[in-house]
Image (cartoon, rainbow over all chains, first blue to last red):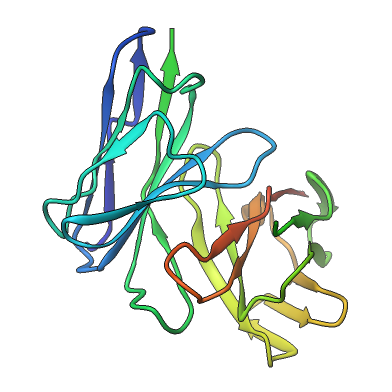
Length: 115
Length: 113
């Protein structure tokens, strides 16, 4: 089955630790995204990548880092600089290439809790 | 900045009735408006989209309308079922770059048997 796999589903982190969330897709999509979802707020874009070895900051990139070494993979690191990291993180991908609608396929999400 | 409002945080309806969810936006008009369904603890799933030059789009029991004058989209679920209970998100699609989707906060629909 084609899709997006996020891991882990649940993650607990102590303050001051960096954690990395995994995102893998086998849809052959060019574009990949990371969103953060908090109660009562819309999805907020953290980082996105349209091509391997290239990525751009979204609206709330501070305290996060990403890499795109392979087309299939787009891991997100939540660093200790992120002041309020407890949230539900969603990875998505799309075939978007600059024109037409940008329909996203999402993973199941990773819930990060800072202890 | 772009602002998207979905009519209410929660909507309860009786099974068999039509559920109507509202998405209002300010500032520029999007080229597309998309609707997603999200179940608790899961990622959103794309349902359908409507183009700015379309008035209405249908898919099975779902219907979406788009009024660029009112800056509003309505999402209808006819003959609602308890399995339709979920949070529904609207998203504005500018298509002017990959950073082009703006999501609303969602409306949590509960269909009561």
